[in-house]
Image 1 (cartoon, rainbow, N blue to C red):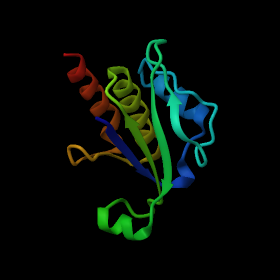
Image 2 (image 1 turned 135 degrees about the vertical axis):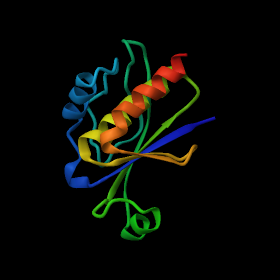
Image 3 (image 1 turned 30 degrees about the vertical axis):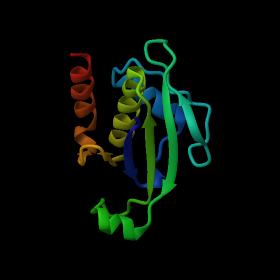
Image 4 (image 1 turned 90 degrees about the vertical axis):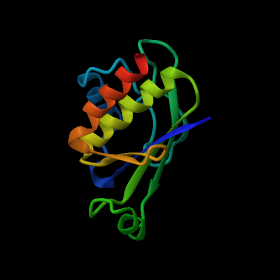
Length: 138
């Protein structure tokens, strides 16, 4: 069974992999995003160790059409998305939640959980992630 998270944002505010990695650490997550990838062309498994243990997620970036923005009621100007796909390993969930929440917070984007239908705004994304991870540990 796979689990997906999607961040919708404006492409022109997408951070560099290095800045994204630093922001994850600064937010206090025990996650080390691999920063050696091209955000526009890379797709597939992106290593993102948790507490030094092997982990990561499938990374897929794509453009978002204006029709999708309207239909999904996304913020005006949204034109890009990053999808995080994970399998059943618990550490994959940790890495995907940390990386996606920080990306949403950094970019003013929104974080969507298609499984629950929940959409989290940028200013709540890191708090949401901490809550999700605390629940997963309980």
